Amino acid sequence: MDRPVALVTGGAHGIGAAIAARLARDGFHVVVADTRPGPHVQCDVSDEAAVNELIGGIGPRLDALVCNAGISANKPIAELSLVEWSRVIGTNLTSTFLLVRAAEPLLRAAHGSAVTIASTRAHMSEPDTEAYAASKGGLVALTHALAISLAPDVRVNCISPGPFPSAKYLERDAQFHGRLQAKNPMHRTGNPAELQGPLLFLASDASSYVTGVNLAVDGGWTAW
Image (cartoon, rainbow, N blue to C red; front, side):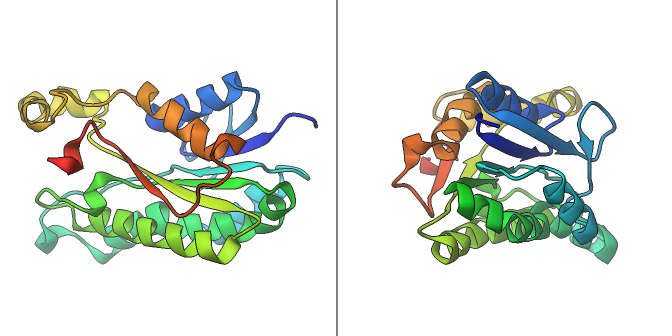
């Protein structure tokens, strides 16, 4: 296959779907993995055997790995079970370790790129988000560790979106969304399409001298 190949986890909806669409539009053959059923590879990326099978089925080439799969379990810590905590850490953080470990030979052979999707919640939090914030903070640290370990063959960078509320979230808490907009320097929240350009830059040779970076795409949220 002459086209570069990209794998996007959590790519069936939201930010992941926007990322997959942009990569495809710019010439990548895109493999989408998601836990949801649909016209993509169904995979639980927190499961070691499933990840190994996913990477093994891609073929002889992988140029870009986008670790986007993520979940949350936002509730008071007294109500947060160890099972829920472990599920968030497994899906959001451990999955990246499993994916990069399995894909390392392919990425090295292609002199490719891995991009993780963390969150501004790695640096600033709201109540009852301990599991999510811990997973995203760990992801930022794992990214710069991998950037050093895999250099010079593979570049590893991170994008920290925030705030990018889903349609379901907006329906559930429109008042809180209004407060987010008011506090953001750009007076609005983000659209998944606004992550496409930064992701394409980090996934492609346009960023050939960029590794170990955590790029906030947040309308100035963390600069406030």
